[in-house]
Image (cartoon, rainbow, N blue to C red):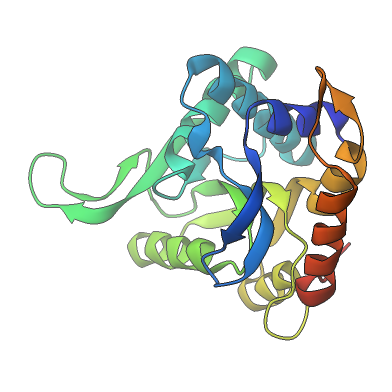
Length: 222
């Protein structure tokens, strides 16, 4: 359990609690968004956690960090910077455009690539159904024969896809491994009734709401 990362998520309001609806239409008592990290300090902190995870998993055996638009863009850049600054691993970054630019530096991508045999690691905040990642993979491969080594996300929501765990379904269909810095079950377990800087983020009522959500949509995957 990565307690430092979990506390970072809570303190920086990346992890929000309340009544939310996910892109897939599920009603959830929590929501995770890295879009709130708009200061240099906060986004550099997230970049460090991603860079550390990527270093542990792949060492120096990749070329580029790719972030799908829009929230993946600052994440890819922050991770590339952290890899250089914190671990002396110099890599490039790449992101896609929602709309193809027709003037100047034309194209659907900004940064290094895509090009044949480019070893890419995709980064994003969460994984629910995998639709956004699949769209990004399709766009990358429509331009070049890239080698997407893996996808690294901040938090695994540990949810069911069509019939079983959404990440397992994605991995079996796309043959690409998904790695998470932390799992949502660990996040709730660690934060439950724990005071952090004078604040309790997850009380008994919120934990009960999460457990109910987990019963309805949960599907843990090791």
